[in-house]
Image 1 (cartoon, one colour):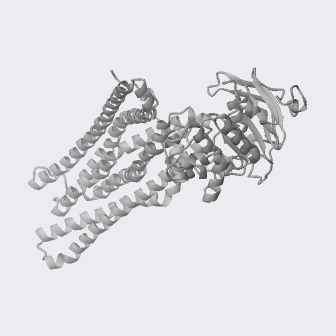
Image 2: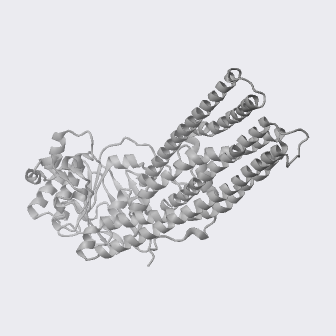
Image 3: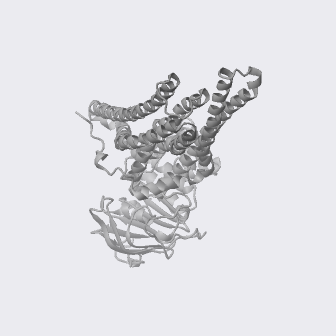
Length: 600
């Protein structure tokens, strides 16, 4: 049974879309000078080659036919040696310049892709397989090295040198020059025919590799769950099937690459053999198409130039698959990111978006106003909130309550700019879409239900909020989050390493580590989603005291199921029926002013 990890792109257009082709051309702007040097080096080496072949043929003619002594030929022999060294030096310069250009382009492209990832919402990232995105940033970018370092220089050399060599040979020996002019252009024509198939095969192979990366990463991430449900062996078999499919596709690409090389070698061999036969039969007297006899110097010059006429085309064929791989990588990146990332200094073709203001530098509690808010599920299939409207005064504490799955988390995420929305969300009178991400990150702190802890020490995870924080400040933040007892039990205290996703800590302890991050910052708006989940009553009370103490002079909005937590807030709103409704505060026993204050 074959593993079907990707669609078959063989029916796709063989021509790269105009926008993708233009984007691919713009990639080289950050490395114009090394690229130009990499392309010019083969041309300069070709000029030295002609001089070398002419001098070598001349020296052999003088030594064999005219009997000139070695001493008399020494200057020309030294000149030949110098030309050989010059060509070797130019070859190295070209290779190094191509490598430098490729590294600059790959670095700039990876920075653009990383910036595109940072600009995406968590909602968008969650909808993508992490393996696909990682493959686009790592593996697909690598495909451009061969294109810029090898393919482009060989393409320029193949386009210029064979015709130039043929034109130089033409006045020396018209028949040989004509043979070069006729046979050389045939090779690119047949290579293009083979190249169409190579590009389609490369796309299939790259997409299979990308899907396999995501497939394997997802299975590895869920390995514990698979073992608990007895699915480990079955999924391992699926990975083997997918790997076998990838192997077959890779061999298919290699078959086409070998076919293109065979076509090239066939025509190159015919051309070289034709020149050799003509020169040999002319010397034997079987062919006499010249008005003057063919000299040894002329014959040797033609024989030495024959393989060099086809050498740039052979090198071009050797790197032709780099073009197919790069074009396939462009299509894969565009598919993974829904669009190609904007390159530095280029005009964006994306639809106009509201202007993003510079960081205002403002501080102090933030007032929140929501009007006509519509929130949908990530797939757009269900409306979570429809026309919700409410306001929160600066410095107020507010609890959002409601049943599980009713939309509290979605609302909290929208208030910090992590969810796409319709309607208006104003922070201190400014539409949230116009506030830059750096300012939002500085002034708004968000704690979700599943905060991410990375592999490192407990202190490292807390210090993520402020890298410059001292050990005393980290300890103080941990103490405010109620982590002292936990730290005391750890073998190395704050220096104890923990695993990815907080492995080694309980759910409540991991949540308090994330809460300590917030205490290490100085935000103006706190958005907390179930901050006391997984805590016993005594710990919940201590953590709430710390949160409310920290929230003085700040605005606090908490989504919670806990009646204790909701009762400690100044006001309660209930999310129900796709609306946000005022709710009587338990401490007031009715619909007093605190229950309705600020509701639009």
